[in-house]
Length: 147
Length: 221
Image (cartoon, rainbow over all chains, first blue to last red; front, side, top):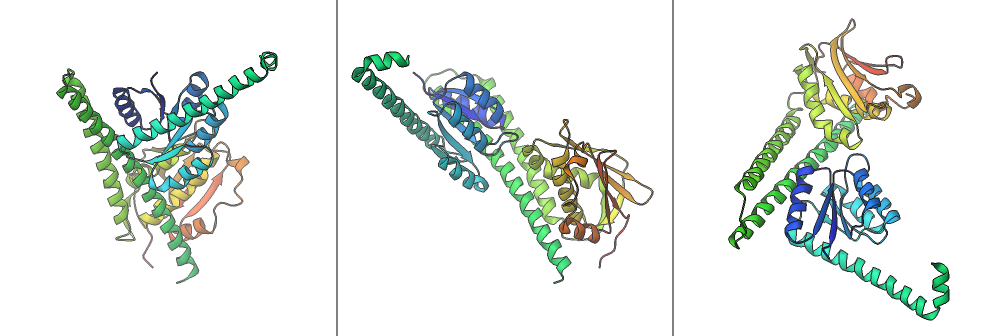
């Protein structure tokens, strides 16, 4: 299955070109031009990794990150930043972002971070599945009662 | 250095820093778009070398987009250059409508980040002799406050016109001016700027606007 990436930035041409480049590299890339639109898409669909600009009109990156962690806690977030907002990106990492990247970013670096973020999410999901399996094996009736 | 000079100096530096930070952020966005478009062009060329047919229209569209971004960057650098030279001759005749237009172009992104549009309404051509840097600083201070008082339209309309007591710059569309309260505005910073420009500031809750009144001419101290 392709890695599902949501790109969130108010610079339309930037997200369009980046989405096309990621699609050429076999990622399933979707774009959002605002924090509000991103949150709405995250409620409806599942994404593995979100690339999120820190500074956007309306809902900014930090607010979007906080919503993502409420709606889809396992979705990994990479913050996109300029020099002036590095502190916000680091603060974002304290609040659950996987990593950050400075704009303009090198494609290899972005792709590498997306892959690592995806691996982290996949491992986390795997651990959750293992824990569920163990729970069912140790107490099938308890697991049935929960369902 | 007098207390007044110190306040004006500090306020001016803060204003200069805020605007240049915003300009650098905008330029970074231009570079980010160019970087992705150039990268995409490279990707398509590499694929073409490996035998994937390439649509020439796609390359043309990318080249057009890059040209547009270069023009955008050029406009930003022009504004930055003009802003840097604004203090060369502190007091000089300026076209008020044109100065407001320039200041709006400088401030648009900062306003946009707060979800507000600054809309300069074209009036007659008015030439005043003033300190353009102090004036732009004052306009920013006023609009920074005014953005917290806008209504549903989320727009601050800026109009320049001749009034009975001088040249007026009106900031309208401030539906929540009365509720916001004006106890802390204008602060010492704005008071000193007003004094330096020999200007007055007044509130009109009925017409939901803030008005700055400027003289046609001020003299260098």
